[in-house]
Length: 77
View 1 (cartoon, one colour):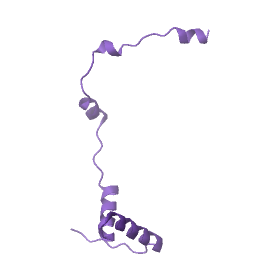
View 2 (cartoon, helix red, strand yellow; view 1 turned 180 degrees about the horizontal axis):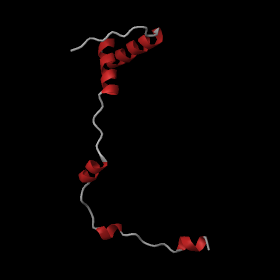
View 3 (cartoon, rainbow, N blue to C red; view 1 turned 45 degrees about the horizontal axis):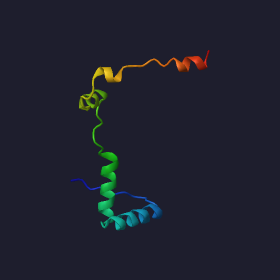
View 4 (tube, helix red, strand yellow; view 1 turned 90 degrees about the vertical axis):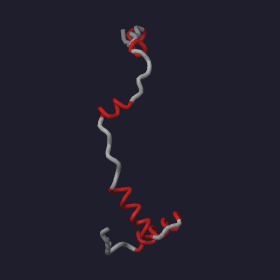
């Protein structure tokens, strides 16, 4: 594993990290590691096709048939 040294951090940021870590019950170093992982190592986003393939096959095509509503046309006449 690599080591990372971050220099020139404002006192405000350092204190906020310590408070955050304390709330989580961990060291500031562990909280720093967790923050970096959450921001930089995100799960791969699925493609639109992958999302479509995961959708359950429910209903029939006729359930989703478009119905013409002529009442809306009367308002604009």
